[in-house]
Image 1 (tube, rainbow, N blue to C red):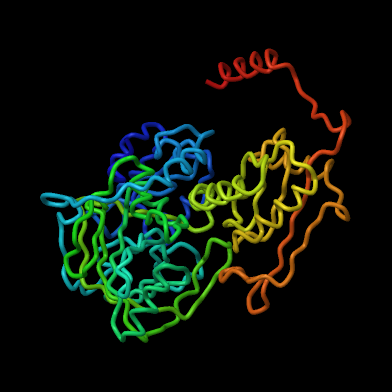
Image 2 (cartoon, one colour):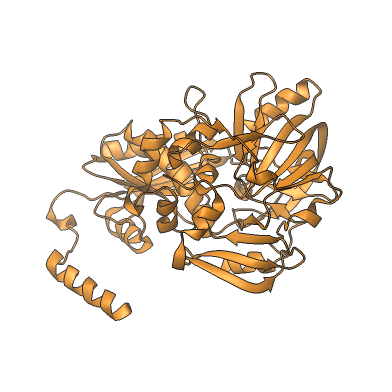
Length: 448
């Protein structure tokens, strides 16, 4: 079974969790440490947050394949397969009976949200503190359909938050509420279990399970929900904290600048929400997700990369694996294939670039190349790719909203076919497995 909440996941990490007992400030200091971590570093729990004696902050939660695999109770080499197998099943949430942990402390009509929650300020030119991993929950006022997604929120002072609603379904729900002249009631879950966090960013088909059902299937246990205090929204009973609010109809204000996952600052004119209540657990854990870090890479790799892999496998024979390149927020990918003729590789490139609107470049290699090793991918490009013959460019495509290079002028996409040619001239050099096994065993002893 999966983890019912964030704290049970953290308690199970052992040496893969670094506890920071020194006092760290939510303004820049916590983000600086999270930014310094890489994909091989442990998760971090800040136990003393300046100005917030009753709170802790956790970060780099799923910044590695080993922690993501632990979160889903699988192995690193089966992450994509596990995701695809479970996602389609759907496991409906259940009602929580009794006193919900997330309601241990209740603040109705709080005067200052920042006095209750250690909202982080990440980058030097950020206009304000931003909530970066809040799972926004609501229902379509027209159809009643449940929706959830991760949307950044800017603290604007007092009880107000600016919310960047660029993606469906929540952008559609908000538009429907505005057409009726009504506020959109929402709840923001902070500090959810890892499977629910992953489910919040997946693409869910209208005819398939919704995201809360996907969360249940990923963790192999239904998510327990309870009705919020002041809005008509069901929320995870085991979240660390909940912000209840209403997105105001017809109101737009500047939101940003904010250091986005692109590695650049981004501003927008966005809707505004007014907070009606905050509930949380005692000694709650605030989720600190620093943009443009390994934590974001891993989240997108599973939720977006595995989704695209599943689609491509159904369309092109021989697709083996796919990796979204770290630091590109899903703009660049490498795909491994087996036995694909060159014309099928070209078709695969066209399909990949059209299926995912974020994807700007894709490189296709054979499965004798480790797609998670930049050295090997570069080797394939250097020795199996010819620019004039193996480059595909698609112009006139829609630009992604946070891509600064596409601002106001659309975008173009490019593909590189770096698969091997015919004959033994393209056989990759290898060392016998017995010799490699002995070498690796010796290195493991020396390092351990």
